[in-house]
Amino acid sequence: MLSRTADHLFWMARYTERAENTARMLDVNVQTSMLPQSEQDAARGWRAMLGISELQQAYDRKHDTVEGRAVIDFMVRDPSNPSSIAACLKEARENARAVRGTLTTEVWEIQNQTWLDLQKRLNNGVLEHDPSQFFEWVKYRSHLSRGVTLGTMLRDDAVHFIRLGTFLERADNTARILDVKFHGARDAEDGDFYYWAALLRSVSGFEIYRKVYRDIITPARVAELLMLRADMPRSLLACMDEVVQNLHQVRNDLSRDTERLAGKLHAELQFGRIDDILQAGLHDTLTEFLQRIYELGNRISRDFLVPLAA
Image (cartoon, rainbow, N blue to C red; front, side, top):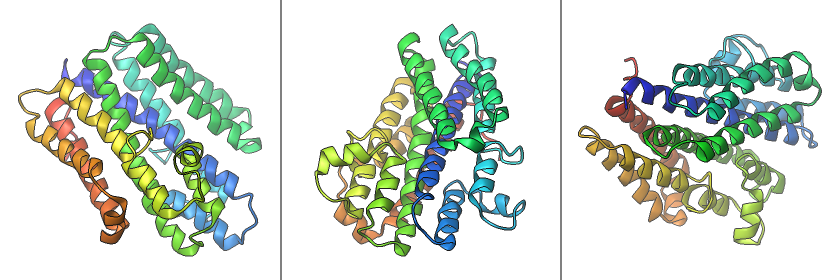
């Protein structure tokens, strides 16, 4: 496959997944903001949202205070924010348009219609009147894109690069949420049910947690579920399972070191124990994981795609 084609497929998937992840985080923050809390606690929650996405400085350049409506607008449609939901869905559509001949008609139509429908939804006031409905729509469109991709496309290199983009982006997002939320837990009680339940809901993990542990929600178990459980779809280990498998399918003469890096990261999660991770320091572990995921993305670009600009 041509590197430019692979690049468009990879980034189409990453941008689609990023839009969904942003919608998930915003939706949970909207729900938790309705709980009784001080203005300082509410602002802290929205500031944490910006921190997860590394958007705090960009937001502060435009706004003097951190307030829910302003954060939502900035992360959904602000033209100065290249990571906004609108920007991500636009980029996903543009990358799909560049490789229409590689995609099935159904996959292209999902991407194109999502972008067209987004314009209508941003103009009809649903974001202001019922933000949760808007975020559910974003998540649904992302789910639809993945389902149609797997249901209509040949399982060739095109699908493997799409899956690589999806799960690299998902691993990065899960690690960021976990890191920021555990830092925020210093300001919350360890037993704060609503705090940890919100974290789990942001990754569709609340029902899964109840099924696996059948007990009260504890920080250590939340970390274990989101890092080390291969059967949890958004865990770090589940994401790395997919990355390793799809890398193997597209391997070439240049990718041996990239596969080795991915395999090592996967093995550390597969054989890791949450007690050891917490003892070593969760923040340090997640910071290192994010650095290595970033390096892995750069190596994939170097070996298979259009190299990232220095």
